[in-house]
Image (cartoon, rainbow, N blue to C red; front, side):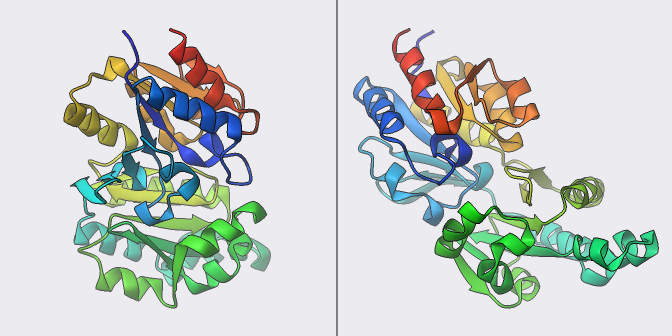
Length: 295
């Protein structure tokens, strides 16, 4: 069946390692739009964090954001569907990541050294109606919390700094699209993931990069957003192609008629894909789109 919709993850997939759109990928996207294919953003980013290099391309009208928690019509800046986290789940997350509880569960009680103790330090991000908020100390020094140096400008340019994120989350617990936990240690991230999965109700948990644990309503997920959008456009899943690199893309790639993982993708994402294309720094998206257009 002919592909009529292409869903694109952005970071480390459509964008290069510096966070920019290559000319070759841009041309391929524009060629797909000109051929009558819907090109859709499918990102963990919030609405206001989407790069102009993508949203300024004529013909890109729809965006699945915050890992499927919200779907937007970009032309009208209208939210077509949105899942808010439950206040109870937000409170549960805060309770299970309370600093003293973290120390007892993972730190001193486990016989960790002071250096190891520093690895359990976490920070928070929160998305509300397309806006991203983050702890001031994380915005000031993202690398301290495990972010790559090339992500500094993106984080500092898209996050509104908040001094006390735990209080902020409690004050806005009925408005949250999602909560991100910024965790320096990957081992600690997986321990937290297991703990929250077992103890927090009504949540969808995923990860796009090593330092983030991304939590939204249980009915979110990029594949959920894609299913909604296909129904909205009158298309079937067999008419969808999807591109991704992270664990948070694996469900989308499995759902799509054709799933493409870039060569730099995580093992889980690669396993979910039908095909592997070149890396994000080698125009893998353009390679895949050109193949689709030649079908």
